[in-house]
Amino acid sequence: MKKIGLFVLVLITAMSLGSCDWFRGLVGMPTSAELREKEEKVRQDSIAREQLRWRQEQIRLIQDSLLRVEAQKQPEVTPRYHVVFGSFMVQGNAKRMTERLTKDGYNPMELHFKNGYSVISAASYHTLREAYNAMNDLVRSVPFAPYDIWVYDLRQNLHQ
Image (cartoon, rainbow, N blue to C red; front, side, top):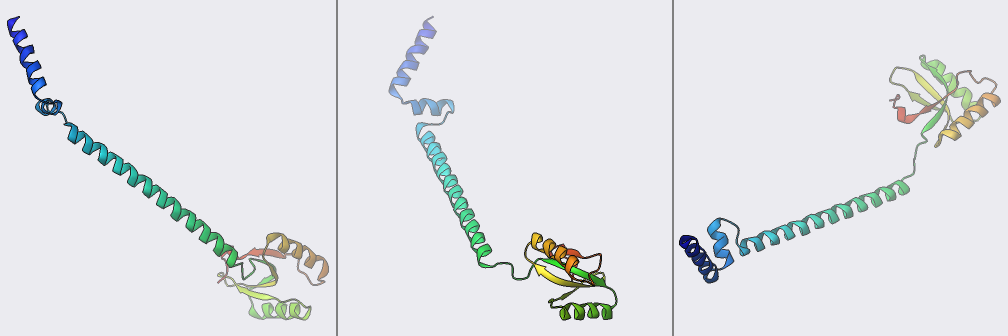
């Protein structure tokens, strides 16, 4: 019992003479200065992450607004949908169809497909609805209209 009392007395004396940092260093725990450094590092890292998130959000917003401006500035120059009046392997037949459409007041356009066919477009439009409406009108109004008129979308990328 005397040994335990002596030990407690030495321990109380050591604690009262030394600081908590001394005791922490003695048992291998981080001192208050080390804890403050770690807290400061965590705080700085948190601030840096938040700033990075904010910058990334600002960049995304700027990119979105630039895309919207570009989309408004550059409307589709060439119409996307073509009402195809025929596709021909023989170039002379394609030329005759072009001449006939021109004579009837249309502005035909010849597209060359990758498979070797020449496709004659009687008219072209920016929307699919306009193209289908025009296709139906052409079938009813043009006396020499073939039975296989169809609408070609340039984004199919079948042409050269």
